[in-house]
Image (cartoon, rainbow, N blue to C red; front, top):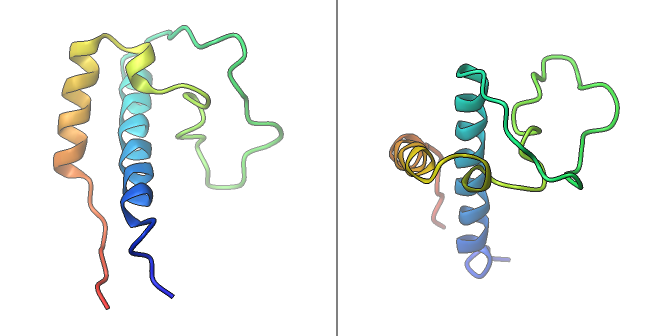
Length: 90
C-alpha cells in the first residue's frame, strides 16, 4: 500500500495545523481577544492530562479569519520556515 496519492493533501493538513497553532500562540502571548464565529465548535469535557488545549481555540475557523492580514502573513511565513517533520521514501 502506498501513500503517494493522499500525501500532498495530508502535508497540507499538517502545514495548516502548524500555522493555526502558531496563530493561537500569538493570540495567547499578546492577550488578544478574537471574535470567533457564533457557531464555532468547542471541545467538550476535560482535557487529558498534559494537554494545554493548544489547537482548540481556532476550531471551526483559521488564523487568517481572526488576525489582521499582515500579522497572519508574517506568522505563516515564520511557521513555514520553521516547521519540521519527516518524509520517508520507500
